[in-house]
Length: 268
Image 1 (tube, rainbow, N blue to C red):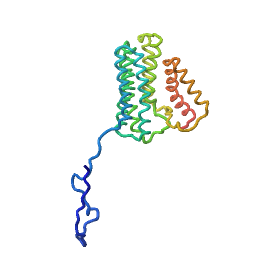
Image 2 (cartoon, rainbow, N blue to C red):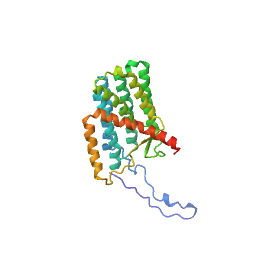
Image 3 (tube, rainbow, N blue to C red):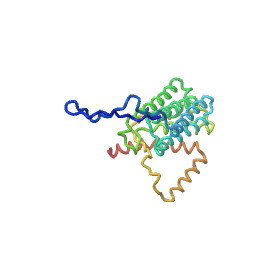
Image 4 (tube, rainbow, N blue to C red):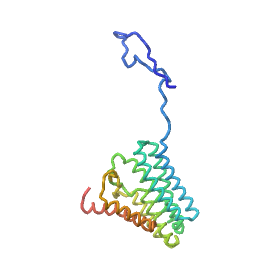
């Protein structure tokens, strides 16, 4: 039961002994209600599901089921894109949710892709293999730390460096495509090394990658846009490994091409 603050009824004082008005009514100890402790369920449930998919991908890679591991990481990407939007729509943003999301991203898009491609191909390169995997993991951690500290000053339209989910899509998409084509990882050890290093270094680069955050989904669009979206779903569903990997390869090159274009045009 909430106890109401009791006022001390005193005779008004005058002169030098006058007490300020702020002290006339005081709350006795224990009268203040305790702050509620808890976390918001809905957005953190999406984050937990994304974290589970990343952990599940690690387990499947250890069991040499690389196609299932790649699908799990792509599923984690979808869930990760939803938790922030759900929090904003339901007005349930919190510092806890932001920190929890970063930790989940480190597992799903840092450790999991590195382990998947290491088990699939990089293991055969010896120390060069685990060095590339570590560079990717360290770059993912640095990328997330830089993103969290630059939220107040960063341009919302662009990411500084490729985002960790897109880097994870490059690495695991490469594994998914060639595993689906029945290639053995040991036949593609050096191409896997190049892809892993490229994805890792792209995360800590200064190249601007479009964030898609300025798209207004509440605005009306021409009918042809809906048709194009429908065709996109048809193409992706016809061969998911190849189409998804091609899309993220194009995105993974776009930031560096934009950086080179700005350097040539000398635009900030």
